[in-house]
Length: 573
Image (cartoon, rainbow, N blue to C red; front, side, top):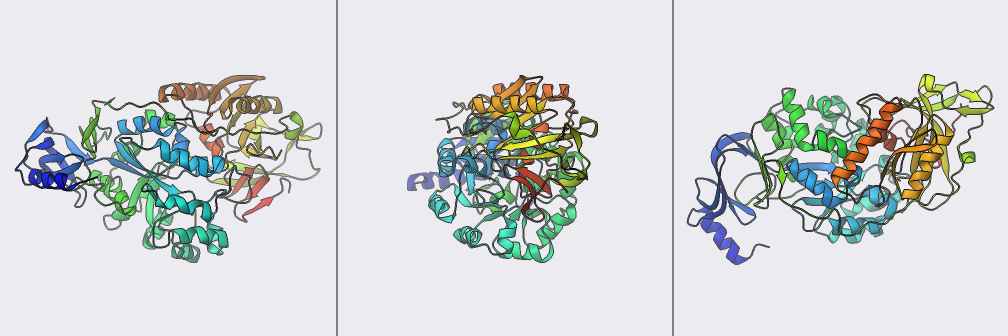
């Protein structure tokens, strides 16, 4: 809180009448407003930038030849998808120069409801990483699945008074918006005239007009440059995404011009820990853009000021008088992993070493793996003579899927996996209320030749999803996750070869990132042994096969979901 005494001191420091607490001297200072560079000092008073110019400070750093930028901001992401508890994730993001994130906690809300939201808010207090939240608008995402909770407008409304809750999160139920569903419209009314994130893959024309007219003001689901440009032209903030399962950045950069770039932001959405460690976060997106010839200055605006303005946060996203002193120090404009990071005027990263420490969590989140009747009979798919099966075909590098009709491989009257055509059995077990629901189907594109993979990270209701070449290994993997309270597992020949327990709601670990990353490496090693090619993140792909708001065909605990018709459909045709 800035009191009167601090304000008087800030004025004296800004005028050069009193030493600053910190001065970064003689660096190349990025101007987020103009996209230009200025060789100058940056003077910091407390947590605020007092001025840009020539200053003296109690603590000074020579920044000659360095590049000073605002801390990077991630416009849309899910903490749970990193598989780390929030405080542990903060350590990793700071090393990548990310000083603020805008998180949608609908993953944990789909499992634990308001208890999950309260846990997220509590765990993200008092960190050198700003964590703002958008209230989950679709819990559950649709009626075609079973979630752990149902959050209507009345349950969300009390959270809007929290200072770090900024609006309504991604509105995935776009058919509900287009047709004026009463429950959906009540949620939209909570933030009328405020901020509402979108989730509208492929929405165009008059449907796009209606979606935006209802109050949606951004979208991160565009996959083509044509879709991106249409959404910008209709007033959307376009969030360019580079996630683990959806690589859209380079395609969407084609629609960004000097005239429209200020309506564009950067987002990682769902990004797994191993890729955050090896590649990075928003800094990695900047590196991709520069490598492909896009101006660093335009990209930096998208990673800083544009995002702050999109969320109506004043005095963030720029190095300017009165702005928050969140500063990255870069050695060049090709590698955007910072040498130094200052958060609120305090040094938190120096030469790649984190200076802030915390326990991975303050208190554990509740678990939730309540599966009924996990036995072989639940996986049997009896063949129907002279009929084809509907197969979910994975689209490489995207979270979109295609619907295919294939002749099934049948043994003893049962439809089974066919590795010769890369068609695997897929199952989703309801894990929240012990309903006994299990959805059965087939998927093409996971590339497994042996064994099975299972996960309780299965957007958005996060039931237990398992795919495999045989029923025995599928059950082995599923049973192991039920015992651990959730996680990711690989099974082969009746044995668990690798497992990452995720006991916090079946989504997050309570361990250090180094431990989680080692377990992920073991899992990736074993999927390679089972035939998965390098570069295919089978766990990320698997996690989206149950999401019935992304075209075209998905599998939930209630059965196959035809997303185009927004309805359940039969397996046989």
